[in-house]
Length: 306
Ligand SMILES: C[S@@+](CC[C@H](N)C(=O)[O-])C[C@H]1O[C@@H](n2cnc3c(N)ncnc32)[C@H](O)[C@@H]1O
Image (cartoon, rainbow, N blue to C red; front, top):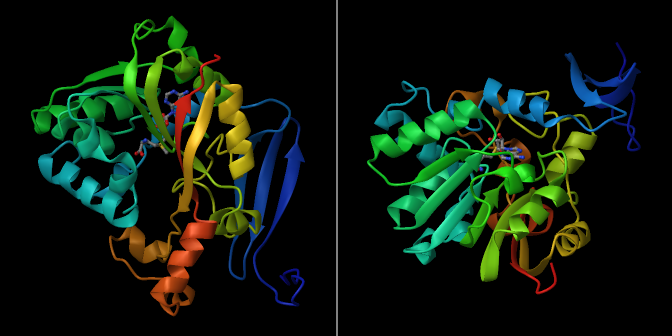
């Protein structure tokens, strides 16, 4: 098979979108393999049930450890790997700052940040769509004997949940709102849980990023497992508009996170950098992360007009 050449005349990976009825598939060709991936429905946004089914089939970071799931060793290793690979999270979440404060985490997954809010004395509530993720997050709190409250809630439907009428000091959501069918609806719903000085800290995927460029070239995919029904990306301007429409004003935005490791060794818990990242001086890699990182880290406050 001869592969198409890019504008530099180099044959490499290429991807083609194929439409079949309402579904579309992404066919990716590389030198030695072809991969066909279902990209979801072309004509309608995937339903929340598809999102739930995807995350229930493999909760986020489930394979961050190969110890027995649910044991202390398992949860310790999941945390160590998450903060090794995404070392910007503790600074962004600033767990120490929320002691004695009411924290709502939206899309808590299997609870890595959750345990850190609780360990630092926050009055913690986590909501999730995926039952399996919630189950593991609850189990994790039992293992470490931490206090917290968990609820199965679709963020877009908070108005119908028992949280209606409550307010929080911090609403925190890391890598979640770009996976929900209607992020603006979710943010509007969260606006209803704010008091005047609530802080919103969220991470959204960045459109102007190294990773988005690799995905567009058919060389990468948004999540570890393929078939993610929704993974939206935002420019900083689009994030400003999204938040403004939902009743928030951005106070700070920064960009971070380029994943530098080779995937196969990484799956075996070995951290071998891709040769092109390995040869980069640290300062150059940091500049790449700061300007083309996959994570848009946003801090915002509610505006007075809802
Ligand atoms: C990439 S994972 C991130 C999990 C966690 N925040 C972390 O950093 O490990 C995305 C999570 O968002 C959850 N999610 C997606 N849409 C949601 C919604 N509308 N309401 C609540 N949770 C949602 C998924 O079930 C999934 O667990």
